[in-house]
Image 1 (cartoon, rainbow over the protein chains, first blue to last red):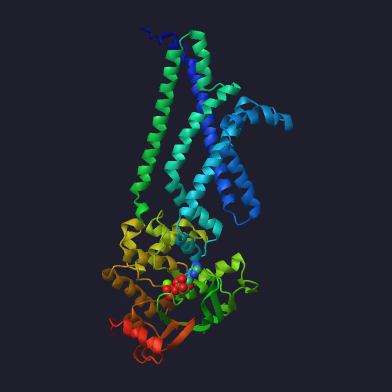
Image 2 (cartoon, each protein chain N blue to C red):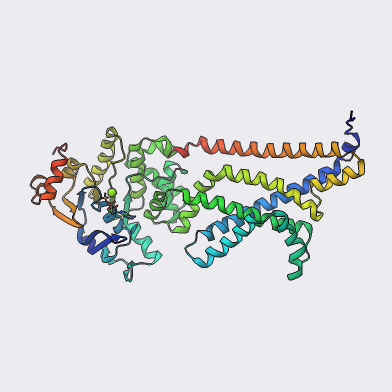
Length: 224
Length: 254
Ligand SMILES: Nc1ncnc2c1ncn2[C@@H]1O[C@H](COP(=O)(O)OP(=O)(O)O)[C@@H](O)[C@H]1O
Ligand SMILES: [Mg+2]
């Protein structure tokens, strides 16, 4: 019978905390960046101009159909060969996950935008609104609310996928846990704790999401 | 004074002609009711006036200025002129098309703040004034989902009025409503007619058209099939399709 002992692990919990902070930092960066990139890609994809439409389509498809680990290695090991940048693990990870989640958000947003009834466009243009004003004031707010659950789902997926960055030595929660496991010879306790941290963090995130969703519903605007 | 003038307007969808060579002259204060069977092109005609549909041929003059220029595939118009045109012609849709994520006052104020660049408080004040006109000032902060169909359509009317249009286009404003709610919307339209507003009204409420309109257009066979005063067209129709249509709509009373 294995004797559980969290003592040595908890004594070094600062190491895990630092890792968790890095995980959050990366997730938040990729999420914020991904929303911006996703919005731009979605708008480009829906643009009447072909010169905007097809490059956006290529970016979206490439990032949706290649493994995230390949993308990460490409940015970390590959990109510095062709452009002279000092590639840090954080930069490579932030780039990868910003564009990757951007590609997914773009598809979600696009589906949301095209799901808004044509009458909304017509009503807005009938009072003289220009297409960009209609998009910003009428279509996007409804599309985002309609797609909020899918975007939440994707954000959770993103947080979990960021564990891949341990492979390029970015000191995220998993990377730090691995170090600690080797140092304390307590992998069972360490990884149990790490699983628990992810469980709690993601449960909180998704709880926050449901809260927001209920607030949208309360304004009663969905039934119109 | 001519508010709106259509000359030789034609429209077809993918080879199917809706109407051809329609001429129409609307004077200030005219209240023109447009009747016709379903599919006769009533909506398309209204939508061509504010260019929600682009006519294939013909020209539109509004307030004495010509809109756009003839291009290869119908009328061509700049974004700016398009916006100017739409501000002069307010549209009310059968399905209301309110913005569900904005309050009632927000719906009415939206064009004022976004298009007319009015400050938000001023836009709201004006919105509430327009809402009072349609009897809904007390609903200013409700969301559209909380309103009855009749109330929604009155908000949509207030939203159009807020932009100070020279002409109002109503596309079957009561067709999506429970019969019990039709009256409140017709009441608002009647009041606007009494104020001397210029309007084009597509409707199946023939009795209402008889009372409120000063001209009736009956659409059929790809154009204006018969037109005249309400007495001429509704009481003494001369052409067979008009007679047939009115017989089918027996339930109307003058
Ligand atoms: N966007 C469109 N695409 C193709 N056909 C259309 C479109 N809008 C209208 N039509 C056709 O044009 C004809 C006139 O339609 P509409 O103007 O809506 O008639 P009404 O309002 O009198 O019922 C109909 O045959 C309809 O099917
Ligand atoms: Mg119609």
